[in-house]
Every structure is written in C-alpha cells, then in structure tokens.
Length: 247
Image (tube, rainbow, N blue to C red; front, top):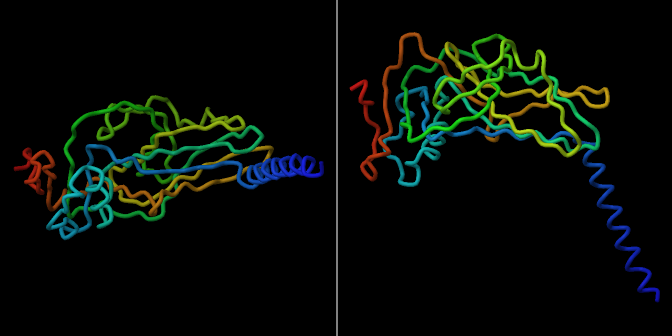
C-alpha cells in the first residue's frame, strides 16, 4: 500500500524537478546562439608568408575542408569573404526580439600579400545572407543573395537590414542566418554581436566561432607575391601549382 503511494509521489517530484530546472535554465540564458564558419567547396585564402604553404600534404588533408583548416591553422585568412552560419534559439517562455546584429573588430591591418591560394570550384549553391562590409568603420548588416559561396553577394535592400526590420522569436522558436563578412582593402579578425530586447531588458550577445575570431583579408595594394592552386583534380598527384590563368 505504502509502496503504491510512494512511487507516484517520486515520479511527480521528478517531473516537478525537471520542469523547475528547465524553467531555471530558460530564465538564466534565454537565448542560445551558435556560430560556425562555412567552408565552401571552392575557396580562396591569403597567406601571411610563403612558408605557410606545406611542403607535403598528408593524404587525409587533401580535400577542400581539411585543406582549408590546414592553411587556416598556419595563419591564412579568407580572401575577401568569410561565410558563417548563425543559429539563434529563444529558450525562454517569452517573446524575444533581435534589434540589431553588428560586427566587433578585434584587429585590423593591411591585407596579407605573401601568397594567394585557391581550391577550384566543383559546383554552386544559392542562399540568403546578411552581408557586412568590413572596410567600413562600423559595418552594418544588409540583406543579400548570392549564387555561389565563392562569388560576391548582391545586396537586395536599399538600406541596412535592421534600420527597418527586427527578428521576432516566439518561445521555442529558432532562426537560422547565413552571414557574409567581406573585405576589399583591409584585413581584420572579427566576431558578431547580437543585440536583443526581452521584457524591457536589452542584452548584447557575442558570437565567436569555436577556435577564435573570424579572419578576412582584402586585396593587397601591390598584389600577391605568389599565387597557387591546389590541384585536387589530379588525384594522388595533387600538388600546389600556378593557376592556368597566371602561368
């Protein structure tokens, strides 16, 4: 008899504890934000020195994704454009409004000029983005479209997106954004700041990708000292070669 009474009470207590913890978590951190770099299947990088180019590429590093990170870990920066995916989730029980998304520049300087390296394209995709021009002192978010991650995005609005838009998230709602940070004449490391408003309270949430800030480098004034292409299409004989148009 007593056992029959205790079991339901324990279950009820556990359910109450789980609900309470969930509510506490939601109160403590109403917005969950993740950001990650999108590595396109065709990319271009700027290198800080010619020595950053590996003399030997292991077999497991020869495709587009591991080759990109191998060079990034050697100090390379995305040439002219960085693409990132940002996932925003309202974990609270109240509506939440994103009033702005801005760029925080960690460092800024002249574009890298030692070498340019590309991974040639093998296809294209279409997507919607928020576009930032990093050459501006305080870059603003513009809505844009592009046909390929290797191409320059085309802005679609007549003014910055958050001048006349906000992003409203209902409780439990998730918003996915594709962010493009472009540089023409500067080199900078950067991250995003998401400005939110909820129940009359304002908050700024930084979005820094795992492993550190985004890094983007524009076109050097006097061009690159070297230009290379990773000839992935040569299979086992793949190597860094002079691109055909510069040969």
